[in-house]
Image 1: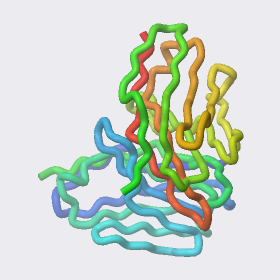
Image 2: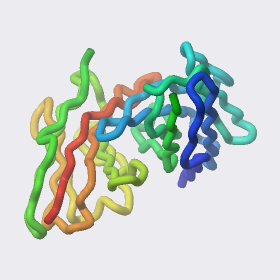
Image 3: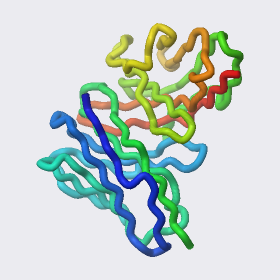
Length: 113
Length: 114
């Protein structure tokens, strides 16, 4: 089955700096890679996703890159703000199959004002 | 904006009792999921459901667990004979999954087994 690894497990950055979280996956059939943000006590919420036919996707301060050959994808947050502090989960899955999403172990991001 | 809703938000039950966690997925979604998250740990897949049957299930989803879509709107997770280690946040999710869309998560039900 799929194995998703995520690093780092914790990350502290100064407000205004960039944060990068990296994930690797093992199953070449995976074609969909969402990123979820989970604030304390709340549900995971999708913040950005990327499909395997795209190498990079950007939405304001958030971007995701995908390297299919190396089987890794990364989340980039620029100009970090205190409200970006949360746990971020990467995931991988196969669209259209109804199969599960495999989640990474999470990265606790703290943005220091 | 449509969202997945779960009830109750918090359930406390005695060990050995049965609990039913309820979810109302987004109305035009076709795939339904249950995940759980033990405090401080990652989100773990339990089961997916499509076309009124289980599509995939994990090792966690043993005979203690069952899912049902009793009507056109609800999706339930039943846990029989609860154990202390069943204490976790349980998330329901749904996705349209035609051409590919993301899974939307409910707000979760915190299950505490005492």
